[in-house]
Image 1: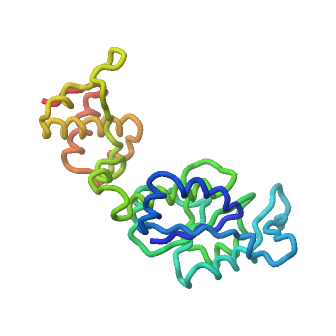
Image 2 (image 1 turned 60 degrees about the horizontal axis):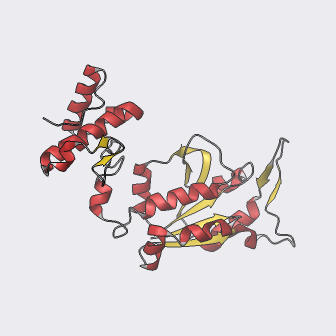
Length: 249
């Protein structure tokens, strides 16, 4: 899978693409990332890519000509073009899976007040937001999307790791512990030291449901939850506060 990123600031991606899991995935040929400088497609002497907005108002708008030329020069006709914007639909794990299992796609990074609407109307297939806040540009959002999607490509990380992550089963992930067994008076829950795999599984599921109820209760209303998780959610809500339990009986 290859992701093409269109940006006014290609240098922002250099260190990011040369580090950690993503760098290894690229070196192994599992993921390809092409960073394209939109300015290189501007035809004027100063490579101007923004101008004042029609109708007035603060800030500048990215001009349509360089973006259109960059898209036409790097993207196959009919390919998926994702514009990263706070006005887009929320980016979720399901969206990441959809992108990871699909064909190559392009990420378009906006700047300033955004891009000319005619580019969106002509080329963009998806408008995606990584959260209800505003960034200085789409580059940071593109890094989030690339990281989230790349790790779902087969072979990048182990399938077992993916299965137990937050949102993989519709729940937030359970807490983790490592050595030492006691840290500043706090001990690792005994069930995790028991070697009893079924009780450990039950404890982790319980803690996932409890954490989801605490931070993202709306996720527990999903039809995608297992019957076991739904039963635990009903029990926790009935009791009012099921936090702090470490043992599974």
